Structure formats: structure tokens, C-alpha cells
Image (cartoon, rainbow, N blue to C red; front, side):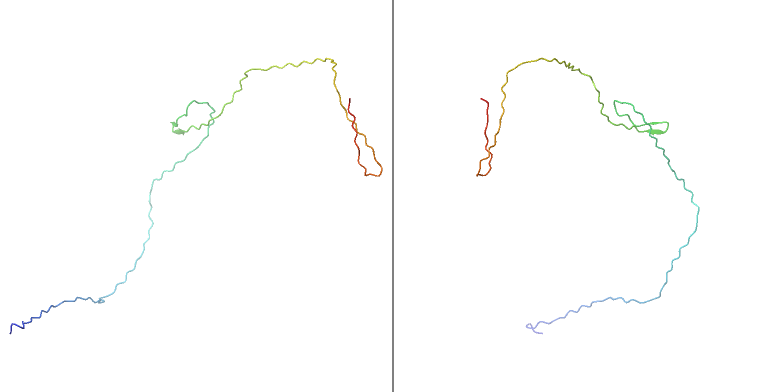
Amino acid sequence: MSDTHPERIELVEEQATVTTTEVERGRVIVRTRVEERDELVEVALRRDHVQVEHVPIGLVVETMPVVREEDGVLIVPVVEEQVVVRLVLKEEIRITRSQHVETVREPVRLRSEHAEVIRVENEPAEPALTEELPA
């Protein structure tokens, strides 16, 4: 070997490759079946019955009554606002009518108008007005 040509060493590497292949080893069949049976089940059920009764009261109250319970009966008050109108006689106005007749003489000036229509021959008929006025 000479110094001008160094020796070469080649490196080699091995690699492994793993693969899988499906191989059928056998088959299975799965079937399902539903069985039914009747059983007697005992369950305690609570059922409430209510009775609603409207009781007219007609009482004037100052404040809203509270909901209360008496002997197992729930009492819910229902109120409404009402406008109260009072008539108060404040005063009377009394008017008395009386009549009397009196004869009176007064001088008055009266006016009246009069019209006179005169037809003129050979001209279209147009009324001519003449006024009489009081002096």
C-alpha cells in the first residue's frame, strides 16, 4: 500500500423487514336469541286527586291576605282592585223664575225698499230698477 492511495474499507449494514400475512385458521358463526318471560312486579303508585272550589267572599280588605292551610285545605285568596265612586251633595243652586208683562212705547226708525220695473221698446228687455228710500 502506498501513502498516495489509502485503503478503502466498505461498511455494510443489514436491515430486517417484518411483514404479516393473514392466515385463516377457522370460522365462527354467532347467533343471538331473545327469551321472554312474564313476571309479576309490584309497585306502589301514588295518585293525587284535587277538588277546586270557588267560594265567593265579597269582603273589603286593607291588605293582601296570605295563602294559608286549614284542615288539609289550601286556601288561596283571590283579590281584585275596584274603583269606588261616591256621590257627595256639595251644594244646591236654586233658580227661581218669575214673569211680568210691561207695555213700553219707544220711537223706532223703519226702512223699506221698493223696486219698479219699466220695459223700454226696441231694446233688449233689461229691468230698470228705481229705488225709493225714505226721506
